[in-house]
Length: 139
Image (cartoon, rainbow, N blue to C red; front, side, top):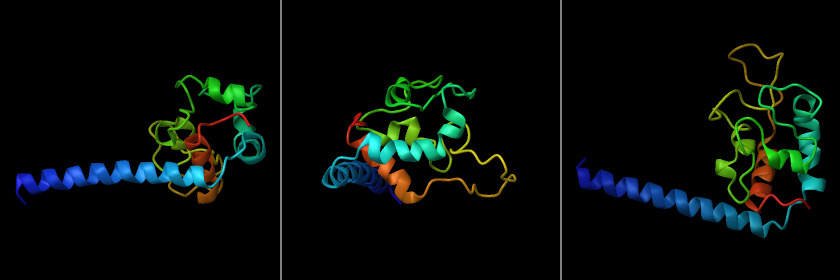
């Protein structure tokens, strides 16, 4: 392929990514506002607090007992970037191949090379990403 064709293809991929992000944000808004208290915190309580409670030691120093602690972040900085789930470590760490460390939630009984049995469902991850995309409000 010629250099011009490759450049054109790269440009189209970038534009498609931008359009995809805009579409995701629009879809999140159309679903209606998600509630931290009613939608987000129950998932955090079940899947995250066994390790990320304020009274527990965890290497990331991220406590998720409350909205304020979540927004405070940990030693890796802000966990949530309101309006930007793609750059929020809170969401990135739930996906395969996170930018640092292991995928969350940890499955300490998992053997190396085996998939986690504690991973959140795709629907739960999407709901959390939608909440962040909606501005990560304390509602």
